[in-house]
Length: 190
Image 1 (cartoon, one colour):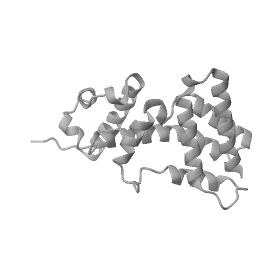
Image 2 (cartoon, one colour):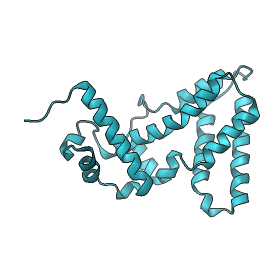
Image 3 (cartoon, rainbow, N blue to C red):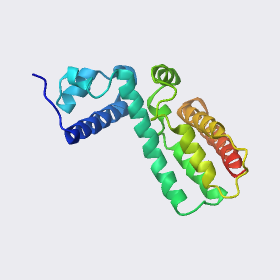
């Protein structure tokens, strides 16, 4: 007979699975991670995994969401103090995109695309546009014709550039990130 988990047990196991996957991504690539290893580390049967995630892609999508959320915590704290000066926000984004801790640090663009194709476009966990809208609204002197999708796309370009830093010399890479961060800040402050 299958084991029935309490709601608290489900939350604990779900979180444990996400953290195991994230830790595994730090040492292995997406394609090298097996669900057998993940479930063994979590102490559950492989079949039980599917009680928490309908597919491997959904599992990694939720890991991507955790990475994004972890990155947003610092920005929320910065914004809680009131809208920072443009230079302070630029410094935040520069640090964020040079620390190698974005979704693109763990997944290739192709892997992200593969995972995203399995997720419905209206998925409530895919809140990047909503988060960008909240960010834009928090800027008091912001023009009203903003498009949060522009912010999301600029952040995606920054993340993608940050994962390809090995292709540029150090000063070229840093300048690329600075230019992209400035474009993002210019848009945010309109």
